[in-house]
Amino acid sequence: QVQLVESGGGLVQAGGSLRLSCVASGSIFEIVYLRWYRQAPGIQRELVASISSVGTTTYADSVKGRFTISRDNAKNTQYLQMNSLKPEDTAVYYCNADIRPRGTAVRRGYWGQGTQVTVSS
Image 1 (tube, rainbow, N blue to C red):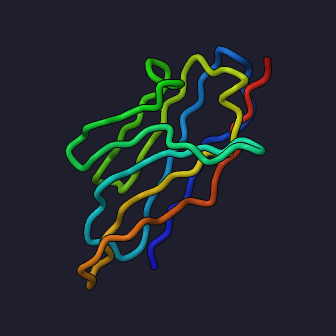
Image 2: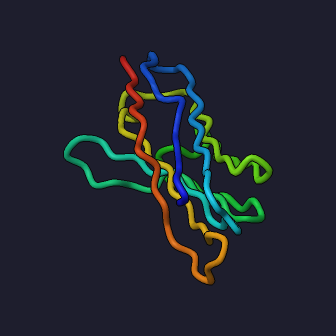
């Protein structure tokens, strides 16, 4: 059973920083793409950042220059460093990973449970 567990959310003042972590566990053969999404109340879930297996990154325009996605393949962990946070960054943040479990030939997407990030003005 593969699962993703997030941590690191919380309440922070505008201009502050938080670092989110997402650890993948279980019987894993390979992890390819890693992504962070966020969803604010009444708004569709949006892609915030992604990182490929070779480290190529992409970011939503709204977070470029402020957020950094990274991964530690040895620990099956991805991170989202969030700096210069704004009230509009308030949302539930979800990690997502394309994982091929051991003993299978197919990759599929897995989701974390979500972690709340609240930025006060």
